[in-house]
Image 1: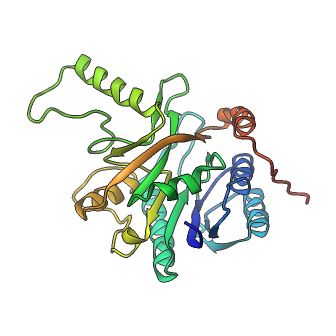
Image 2: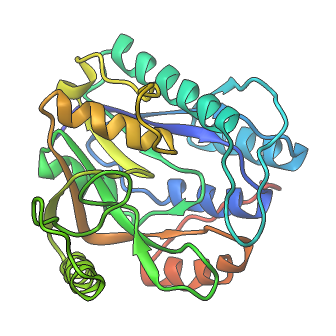
Length: 276
């Protein structure tokens, strides 16, 4: 692992409150023995968020590329609402970062969405797994009072159970299989999955291919990660999720209070400060 060059980055469009937590996370990420570079595409429309991102890249240090400056997609505290234009824009941004990783001959590309907090050991641990594509797990309540769901799936758009061929499963059978899948993911380990996103390490072998986040015209799946994962499977790349160091997802503003608890549990030492 010593001497590996890893590009870390993501498109960024976030509230300053969440972005400051993200900054804390990246500053605490253990990168010992790894040559890391940071790259972000600034798609923020909030001036304070822009200032936070620029401060972060000075501390890391990192590089910022400008986004297209379009107005944000509709979002609320209930859920993120994506329209076709938003998905296409993010897809283009991710493809841009992919191309930079290819052209720079990096050993890996680590996408970390800007609403995640990572355990400091995450990057080194994922590299050690030596997989084509691997994600660290995180859990989200897609509705404020709903159950927690992982950001990985087994089949199709977000199917979280193993189908039984042509046999149509009853609702109780689907529920049982889904619960079994979730129970497995709560045990530390590395598991093969059919789709993933959010926190994803892509190997050099995959970077050398022509894989992309471009929309596949005859699939109705929402989200650029779905199309990336379909392409990965077709090209013969295997996808895995690691569950040893779960990340924390700040899906909505109401999740921010949980950041302090997570950072204490993970023994964060560095702290992002706009005034320093």
